[in-house]
Length: 199
Image (cartoon, rainbow, N blue to C red; front, top):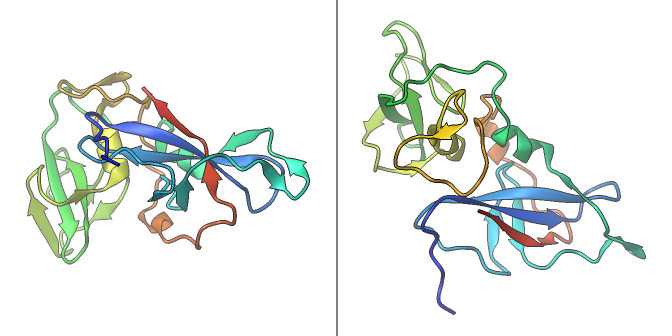
């Protein structure tokens, strides 16, 4: 089967069986422009870091108990929620693209930080002048997903930056996102779900 390539960023909703409770967990999966649109059976990571399998929804939340309701994963929603303290970002922002030497994720840092202060990325990660950093161009490396999502929006304005027309509704990505959340336990049992594209 030929892969369908996404021409713009999008979010995919994925319902999975919860570790406890009677509501399915509804996770969000980010697909960037130029990436294949997931198919049933594909294994991906949700915004919260949990590995999940694309597929039909579970019919039962527990043996003999039908799955009739779903609740949003709070950690996925935290990535998409407005930051408690908005950072002022100009309409045509100047940004730095950095990553720790040897790391994979490239973080986006607004170039409004004083030379003596720490560099604060859009996802909330702090870098100091003593850190061993690589300075890259905007097209280099693999972007940090929370930084990328937040970079598409003008802080506090509710509108996308020129040249970006994402298919999902996001105000600002929460600065509460922690990079360490990607280190999560293995997949939950029965992780299969409904795929919905938000356009």
